[in-house]
Length: 56
Image (cartoon, rainbow, N blue to C red; front, top):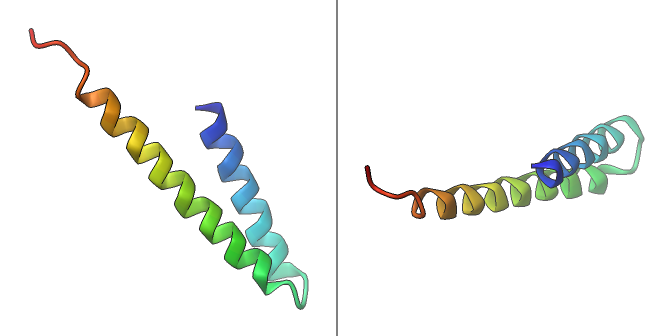
C-alpha cells in the first residue's frame, strides 16, 4: 500500500511540474503514465487477493 501511495504522489508531482513549468510538457505525460501503471498494478494485486479467500 505504501508503494501505491508513493507512486501516486510522484505522478501528481510530475503532473504539476509538467503543467507549471513552460516547456516541460513531457513531465505531465510521464506523470500520467506512472499514474496509469500504478492503477494497473493495484488492480492486479486486488484481483489476486480475491481468489485466495476461503469459502464459508
